[in-house]
Image 1 (tube, rainbow, N blue to C red):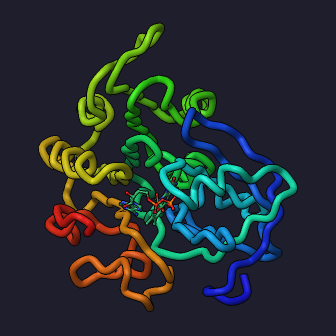
Image 2 (image 1 turned 30 degrees about the vertical axis):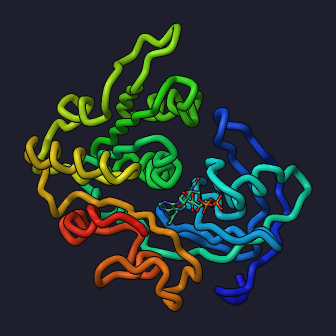
Length: 271
Ligand SMILES: Cc1cc2nc3c(=O)[nH]c(=O)nc-3n(C[C@H](O)[C@H](O)[C@H](O)COP(=O)(O)OP(=O)(O)OC[C@H]3O[C@@H](n4cnc5c(N)ncnc54)[C@H](O)[C@@H]3O)c2cc1C
């Protein structure tokens, strides 16, 4: 896209309702657009505001720009009203990617809580697209209830492509036959070879802290655990300072960090 501070108008191709409060927008990406798994865009709603949203599509299909969005406030509510044919205003891509290449020859474990599966999905696509590079791929996914599960049908496809997928819910609703409880409970089964495991975590910070602690207990090196941090951000390019956390600007230095670099900062709440 031309200038990092100027939103680019893209045509919405498809809107999919994923759950009661979450939807996916697919838009036609500009010519030559490329991104890496874990990067995000700033989505702009004229006259309303902007918010950071991770790219949830495949890096191997850069022509389709995909975002999965949970409605929490004004900007996301307006984005939710967009339909096929409407214009979506986008700046990006920004931020540091998931280091998928660090899992080459190793096991890759993705731990997602709720909407956290959306920023992880491109890493999953990337790892499954080249099965010989990553030894084993596993996903631990926790949602509030079965009604909050994202990409439910696609989870089957990931299994068919060789990933081990564990899903748990906080609260069982009628018909749910899977595990109930926090996502960390799935980890002992999914971590097969701890010293050769690289883990990417995305979800509420408390979930990431507990998951990182459990991975350490299981023998995964803290250096091999990566997290993504969310703070309210404005410019996206490390200029305004809105998303500063300790010595870092999350938009420029993150959002993906090696866990030990940010573990203590993660306890600092946003004002
Ligand atoms: C790098 C990055 C990637 C993101 N990716 C996604 C994504 O893929 N999908 C998605 O649905 N959301 C994502 N988010 C979160 C999204 O940017 C916020 O929810 C955004 O503020 C929504 O804007 P809004 O105007 O609708 O709500 P707002 O009015 O801004 O916020 C509603 C409530 O959420 C709180 N809040 C807002 N943003 C944050 C934040 N970043 N951290 C903690 N609390 C916050 C506000 O204080 C308020 O209470 C991402 C955030 C970051 C920083």
